[in-house]
Length: 301
Image 1 (cartoon, rainbow, N blue to C red):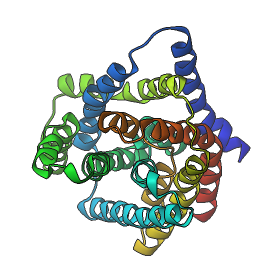
Image 2: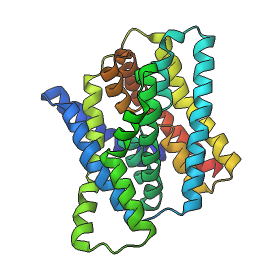
Image 3: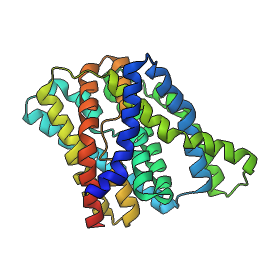
Image 4: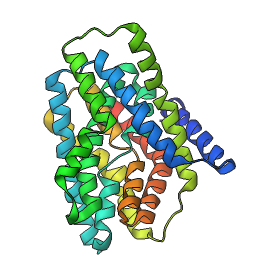
């Protein structure tokens, strides 16, 4: 387990710490940086990997089904536990933290360090699926009953990541030629996503302030870091997924709460201080919990 922490988790921690230290020293517009990462670097990364490393349709379908089952099961568990502990007042923001892991900023580098390029393509696909869920279910949770589904669908279809996904799938599935003069700069910009995302994560942690929601924060953090990998493990076993996609799904969905949810909670005024608190706590604790998850999946698979 110590070797896993040293070889996989520690490199992630070092880059996050560098971003944290930089933000503590200098004033940085982290919202603008996060927007730059999600609207430019992420689409380039998604296109680069989908265009050259298409995922077989049956595997893509199985992974999408696994993620949908996982999300539904985790939502049911979150609702049940928050009602059991009489914390229903924070249920909506809690679901925003438990259902959506940080598969992009955190999960992608982790998968790259742990399993290499072959698994990275699968991890990119998980990020795409997670983006779709965040901008549908996530917005519905944040906006409540006032959600306009036509507006939400239009927003999803015009996201740079959605456009990049569509183009990447077209090029990959139909094996369309892509000159190196175009592909190489796209791949180069996309590869910048990994270190930049971790630096931004560190900067965002430097700005977070724990809120006075001790019990609710502890409960949501336990669901996100402890129950999530257990639930996903049950799903991948039930679906009979092969070891590599199973590992990717479990590790990706065992990461901390998604930083995007903090921004969404602030935009829709859904207890943003609570969501930021859970994001901070889960990110800090995940350096240890993910070491255990990585060790466990190696034993099981």
